[in-house]
Image 1 (cartoon, rainbow, N blue to C red):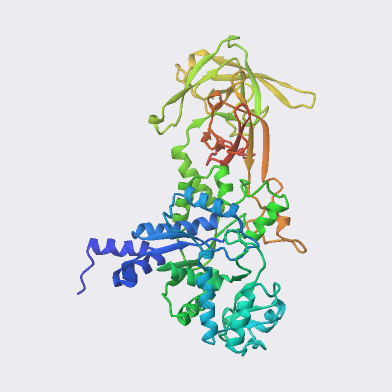
Image 2 (cartoon, rainbow, N blue to C red; image 1 turned 90 degrees about the vertical axis):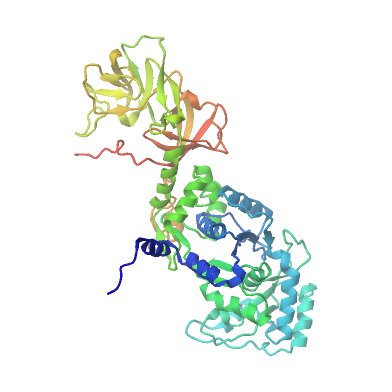
Length: 571
């Protein structure tokens, strides 16, 4: 009879199951002494744009694995395409990685650091008969490559003698030939089922100045030839890539095997896809260049600088990446999961304040003119250690337009003629009337207050169902408030109507700017980037770019899980 596993065995099995497959691989390698017990990863972005939330997943994985297993993680820039790369992107990427809470120490690397070694290795492959100079144009090379169902055919230059290829390669390096006239290709198998293995290009001619090496080079290695060899030079143990590189792994291994150099191992995980946005650098660049957004840091974009400006925190993004996990199969995560991670973080750390986004003037008729009271408000209802603040109360206040109705549905518990509601931290008030303009819009509400209900409770025990927020008209500050919605109307931006492209799915209402909003006076000196919960409204940050003293600008980072503001007609 088999014995049931004891509790410790069960816990160990559960812990193993909770490990994602990369962790399990690392732990197996450590247990077997692979790589001499080392763990060394790298995050290798190309500096041709700004990082987005998809890169955050890779950053958290690579730096996280290294930290978890007492290893190292390099930040390496894959800077092999001088026509698209800039120092601006290098600095922005470094800032983003630091902002997420990670540090590469003295391990800042560039593929361009290895150009001399990569060239020497290319020469080694030519001498070994494993590479050749090809004179086919880019278009001809594509034609010769074949298709998924048909094999390719050999280049007419495939059997070029090694001595001739060596001479031409040296002359390419010396700048003797124009762009696009020759390439160096690996000699593998033009009939391979994996198209990546059909004599891939290793070097191309580009007479372009490089952001680090200047004009020292006019030939540049391709990613596939650079990636694995850079890993080898840095003695990476676990080269972690997204799934689109799975078909490139045989080529990764081929180069290392043919060169006879230190061999890391490449592992692939599912990239991050989010609803209502996209992760294509090319498409993000088009949105920026065509003016659909205000720049790379537009809070509607999934770029890390955009998310940071919107009010996302490093902790929220790290927690999001941990929540979605690491898998082997691509899937799409709903945007609400990312928003939930931010909401959970800000709920803990954001002090509460009042903001009236669409103000409606309220006159409390029986409140003494000229009188001002300082009422006590909590900075966080669940965290008394965050203290309290004083908010002024006066005869004329602002409330939200949506908090008043001439006639209201059954479950509307806010201000209606003849009804009493609670002003948060203040008094019970009852609506006695209202004023309209010539267009028939309510522009002022008249109320009376009960002075016995200071603090929000009645000594006679009567209850009210509605509680609304408010601001003193005299003391509140004008602010611009920017309300953001999804960048695209559809969860899948590529789900287009016939004859249209993804641009047609841009959401015309992704940004609403309110210029007459009011905030409480405690925010007069709010620091750029500071985060707050506007009670009943959502979480907001002080825009780090446009907000100035006397001209406050707030971005709504995420709405609340708040049912108060929902009016369901007929319910």
